[in-house]
Amino acid sequence: MLVKPCLPGIPLAVCGNGIPFICRLRIIYELFARYTNSTEKANFLLAGASSAWAREAFYYKYGLNSIIAKGLFSKPNVTGTTFVYIILESSNPEAKVLPKFKENFVETGPGIGYALIYIPLFSAEETLFNRAEANVMSGNFDAALSDLNAFVSTRVRNYNATGDNLTPDKVKAFYKTTDLKTALISTILDFKRMEFVGEGFRWFDILRHRLPVTHRTKDGAVITLTADDPRKVLQIPQFAQSNGITPNPR
Image (cartoon, rainbow, N blue to C red; front, side, top):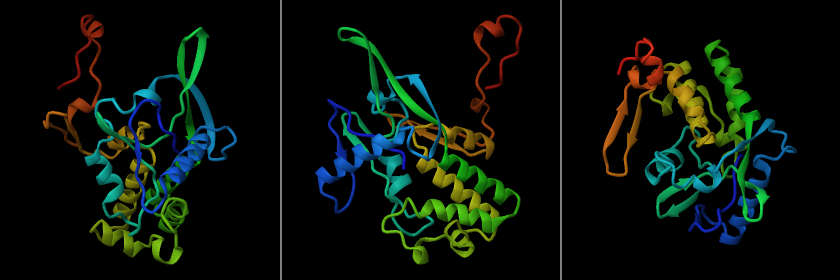
């Protein structure tokens, strides 16, 4: 699983049931050490990037707040059981983060330097989901279910194949559809949304599958992008427009 530890100076609590706090901290640190480790077999390709993501994740606009976190990790899911994702939280500002990226501070002088993180650009999880989706689109539903159940076996609490594995009837019933293809694509998109929180994968799924998007500002305003909302396409830069390039519609 891909995760990271507490950030110094920020009030954090670890969410979880029945696990002593100090043990949860140890688990977080162990997961943190593995997430971007070159010895982790699930990391196929790693890259370094100059970034303050690790220290600023709690403050980024439209991050993972309690409403979104509850919808992703606490609501009933297609497996019928509980996922084991560990979440860190801050009360001021109110935010939640899946601990994923460790900051490596590169010192260029006494007390000065820059923040560096390592990012998995290509992972076993992404490969598994890509193959599952390709199999669904090709009509190979049994193969897709096999991949999804391999993922489930590593992500649910107290995994039991008999009760937790996905079946055609189970996914169709959960997503309230008679179409297995639709149910499996919904399963993949939901799994990816949880697994890759904070990594940017969701935006590509939103574009590919024409999904609506809803943002809530800190003031309570609701901003909705519909399936074909033109704002999903980046605007042509001003300097290009000034040279005669027609701007994208808004």
